[in-house]
Image 1 (cartoon, protein in one colour):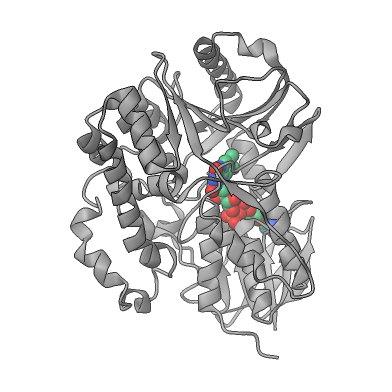
Image 2 (cartoon, protein in one colour):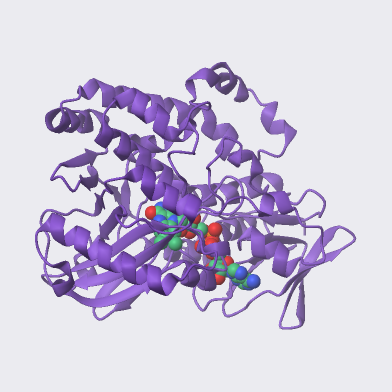
Length: 489
Ligand code: FAD
C-alpha cells in the first residue's frame, strides 16, 4: 500500500516514519529543495544559524521516532539537558536566570525578588499536574473521536477541572499567584510558546512552563537542525522516498475518498494521503472544489515573528543560550500583536546564541545571534516600514541594556519575516504555530487529524490538532499512526 505525504515539515517526516514502519511504501513530496519546513538552518559569512525553532523540549518524542529506524543502520540522536533555561533582563537593570530545576530556580527568585522559593516550586508542581492530567486527552489523542472521551484517562481531568485554570486567563492566574509584576510577566511569556497572548489564553496553558522549568530544556548536539536531518535519515532507512522541488497542486478525491495527488499535471495514486502543509492552503489550493470548513479555517492565526540573524564580532559573557529582554508594557505589546495587528515600539526581544554551545557556529571570538520579536501574522501590513522600525527599536533596547552600540558589532545580517515565512513554508499569514490559543475553545476548534467526510485523508503538523511547536507536531504524527490501519500487501 502506498502513502503520499505533502510536505517535509517535522510533522510530515514523523508521519512518514510511522507509516513506513506500518508497512506503507511512503513518498514525501516537498516544494522546497530541502526538508524541515520551518525547522531548517543556513550558513552565512562563516556563521551557522538555526533558522526556526531554538527551544527543544520533550526530546523523548524524537527518541521514539529514532528507535523506529531500520535494523541494519545505526542512527543516533544526541542531546543534553541544560541546567539553565533562560536569562531574563528588564530595562530597569533587574535580571534573573531561570533553571530547569524548580528548587534551584526558586532559590534564584527568592534571592533576587524576595519571593519565597516555595511559591515557584508549588507553581511548577501545579503546572506539571495540569500537564500530566490533560496531555493524554488533549495532546496525545484525537479530540474528534468519541473513544477519546470514553477512555479512563478523562476521569482525573474532569474531577480536577476546577484546578485547571479554564475559567481565567493565564495573566489573571499568574497575577493572582505571584502578585509581582516581573514574575507575572516571566510566566505570562509561556503563552508565546504557541503564538498566543497571555491576556487571552486560558490559565490551563500555564502548564507549558512545566516543560521548560521542570521536564527540562534540551539542546541537540550540532544544533536544532539535527532534529530534521536525523529524522530524515531514519525515514530513509525505512525506504521513505523524499521528492524535493515537488509542489503538489491538487489532492485527488473520488467518491469521498482520497486517491492520490497531482503535481505538474502528473497524477500520483496512493491508498492514503497526508497533508503536512498548513490546513488553510490545503483546502483553498489543493481541495478548492470541496466544501470548506470556514469556521475552522478562519480561526485567529497565531503570532508570526521578525527574526534578525546577526553575526556579531565579539562575545557577550552576560548572555546565555536563551535570553529575553522584556518590554516595559507587556499588555500593550500583545494588544498591538492581536488587536491592532502591528508592532509595539518597545517589543520583548528574544536572543538565542547557539554558538554558546556549538562553538563552530561562529568564528572564534564572535557569536551568532538569532534575534526575534513576536509580530502579528501577515494581513497585508507595510512590513518594510515595520521591519525598519523594529530593527531600530531592538538595537536601541539591546544597546542600552548591554551598554554598548550593538549596531557597530553586526558584521552580517539576514532577515526572516511573516511574508518570507509564508512564502517558504506556505503557512497562512506566516503564523509560527497555526492558529492561536486565545480562547478556551481553541483546542476543540483546530482541524482534526483526519477528514470527517473524505476517507484516507489525514492532516499532520502545526496547523491542526494538537497544535504548533515541535513536540505537538510530532504528536500529530502519533495520532495519525493510531488512526490508520497497518498496510496490507
Ligand atoms: P512546516 O514546518 O510548516 O512545513 C510544512 C512543509 O510543507 C514545508 O516544508 C513546505 O514547503 C511544505 N509544503 C507546503 N505546501 C506544499 C505543497 N503544495 N507541496 C509540497 N510541499 C508543500 N517550535 C518549537 O517547538 N520551539 C521553538 O523554539 C520554535 N520557534 C520557532 C521560531 C520560528 C522563527 C519559527 C518559524 C517557528 C518556531 N517554532 C518553534 C514552531 C515550529 O517550527 C513549527 O511548529 C513546526 O516546525 C511546524 O512543522 P510542520 O510539520 O507543521 O511543518
